[in-house]
Image (cartoon, rainbow, N blue to C red; front, side):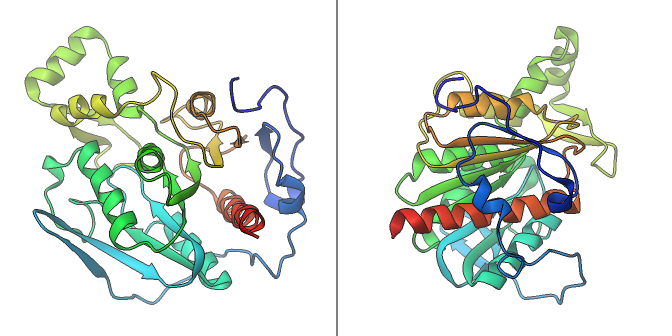
Length: 305
């Protein structure tokens, strides 16, 4: 595949390190260093009760205020971009925060407009508006170079942010990256179903991750999202990219990460497949995520020095 260096299948990672098998596609140049990382540098993440901390708000003229939490620290900073209507208090966001605290790196997590503690009406939100949210965080809160970690739809938005802010975004990590995801899923529906959704104005998309069993997605949201699709042409992102995906993901097929790897122009791209994982991450997957961030920090530090 062009530009991704994924001609051969890498070796299986031992169970003793990450708990479950992972398949590596591509020549993972930092893999040996990552596997040899000393435990005292990257402490094992364990779920724990956390004290509540205050939420800050980014004020934006003519746009909803965004709720966020920020750690000051070393560069590169890390920014977590959540999935569709997910907030900043998810397991991945908190695990990355603990990791950044342990190494003294800067970190930002936030809520999209219309989600969580941020202002705004969810019914009026679009991919384009959430893209602006991400850029506001990068422009107004982040200092210096940043590694973006995008989960699901956040992986789509991280690519848009890298295209818009190439001087500031120095690396990307996608988790079940849902590039063009909602648009692709909608277009796969039968014609009569799509016409019914257009008439109603709402797509009740079945999902086991929703308490209601469905996500009610505005038809206008899907049509607006079409303007932000990326897989139809080369994606002009040149920074290092790591894409983690569960092979049992029944929401966003793992093949999507392969497509992204093929489309981006960057030559430093690795796809990491988790054989037994689905759309949401297990503890062992989160440990792998933390190691991947750690490896990229080392890589970027080596380049700078």
